[in-house]
Amino acid sequence: MSAVKEPKFFLTDGPPPVDGGPGDIKTYREHVWRRSDYEALFAGARANQIKGESTPFYLYNRASQLRIKRLIPDAKLIIVVRDPVERAHSNWTHLWSAGLDPSGDFLDACAKEDQRIEAGWADFWRYIGLGMYGEQLSHLYTVFPREQVLVFRYRELLTDPVPVLNRACDFLGVRPGVLAELPRENVTAHPHATMRHSVVAAARRASTALSALLPGHLGAGMTDQLEHLLQQDAAPRRPLTWEQREALIPRFKADIALLETITGEDFSNWLEPRGESGGLVGARPSGQRQARNGRPRRF
Image (cartoon, rainbow, N blue to C red; front, side, top):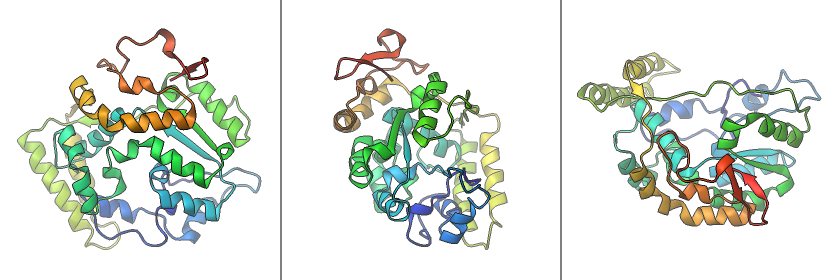
């Protein structure tokens, strides 16, 4: 795997954009967009080793899928899908806690998505759009055959990782039974919406704009220090409430139905309430739901 976790190489045909939303310029500067630099990420691999990288935006960005096909037509793609409301909330929490999202209200931030797209903000601000897996897979399957794509659920990876990891190894053609656990999950803190947070967050957003004017990474230290101040003594991430979930589920309902049609699997639990722990309220025991073909499937 590339040492750079998300190279983002296939997101553009050349240099990334030069402006965008809060913090976007810093992210764009991290793009590995030159082919020679991208190939250098895998220079240490042996000739017979399978090489890979992880950039989640390739699923959302349709042009990326076409670029991958042109350069690596036999690529194998592993897709992880997550409850889209939970994914959106996690996305917003990350940007809010970092002082980048100016909206301290999750639903308000989601409502501003179209406005932010028109303003040229980067893909990471698509709280709703990034969770439209039905649309994304529909396009992906017009570019790559299904036998080159493996889809599994984020919740499976958390609750029962070994079978999922073995399935991924089998899919890639590498020896299963080696991976038995996942690295500890990063847990985002959630600073309270105090005056201090408002001031520091505004300074963080201003610093990201200023750093874009400085050569190299001269502004990175300043922005990192401000983010550290935001995280100091912050409360743990707040759970998604049922009221927030209920407000957003209709946005995803049609796409979830499309995803079920494409995959033949049941994702109806994504339309149900969840308790504060993240567990389904009134769910069938043992995480079993009936698939369309009558066989139980894990979710």
